[in-house]
Image (tube, helix red, strand yellow):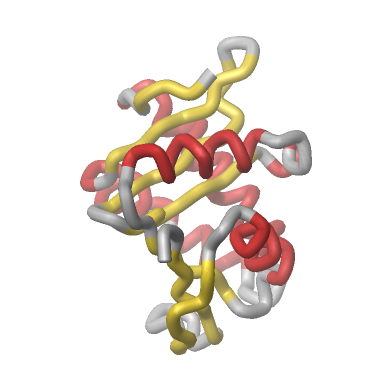
Length: 141
């Protein structure tokens, strides 16, 4: 079930975000992601429109929209590959006519996932926080 995020979901969302970020981005140190947890808690989640995927009364995935950008989409690592990400992304695309996102070039699995879901690369740039190359992708082009 996908539902709107509420404050009681914060710890679950942060745990999923951290675990999935470390797994998906093995080319960036885990310490970097750990250093960003408080920014997620205090800055990014509060200003985003966030939805969670709940299974058996437990939050196992989420996405966050900021304006027309998919700022985050993450599924618990142990549940990846079961269609939860597709459901979350489909739900997110239904919220906006046009949706853009950034994905690290080195994160080949996520990049291929977005391509398979109809996103196209519109630009490539260096991420200001890590210096790694990333693509900006967009749906609805």
